[in-house]
Image (cartoon, rainbow, N blue to C red; front, side, top):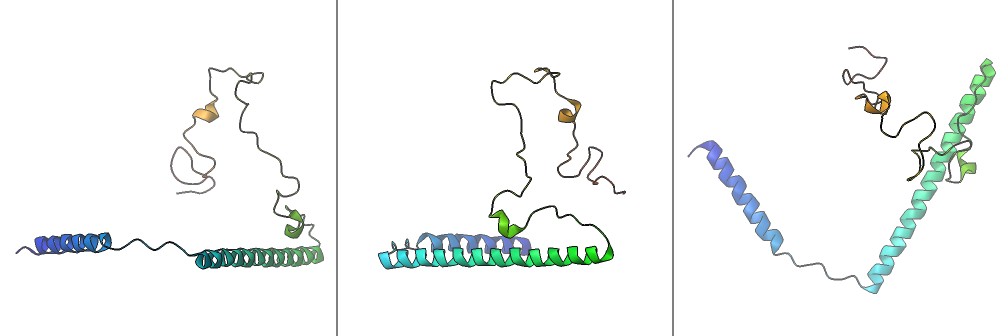
Amino acid sequence: MNPTLRALTAAVLVVALYGAAVAKLPAPPPLTEEQKAAAEAKKAKDAAAAEATKQQQARAEDRVAAKYIAEQKAKGVAVTPQMGPTAAAGGGPPPGATAVKIGPPPGAAPAAGTSSGTTSPAATSTGSTATGTTSTGNTPPGTTR
């Protein structure tokens, strides 16, 4: 018998037997009230641990940034942080962040200097500035092949 045919037959047999074995497994029993309560407690504990880890990470980042700024200040280089302290941010947007307007609301008149039937050359370009690729290839701008 051909080795390829033998391997194919074995693979089909394994898949068929696995399907039969999985099909015969019973559905898991429904959770009891104690199991549900234990699952909720575990979920709350995991959420608290994740929040504590997040706060520790934020404090560590603040310490590193403060050390870097102090070192640069000692060298005479003025460093301005791009974001405020993470502990004061409280999970909201960083200070000075502005909302990005995607386009006019539905039914609004087009802005002055634009027409509703044409598109700008930037809109029809095949290049993508979000990924750093250009229409001439997949090389990011500023690099050479």
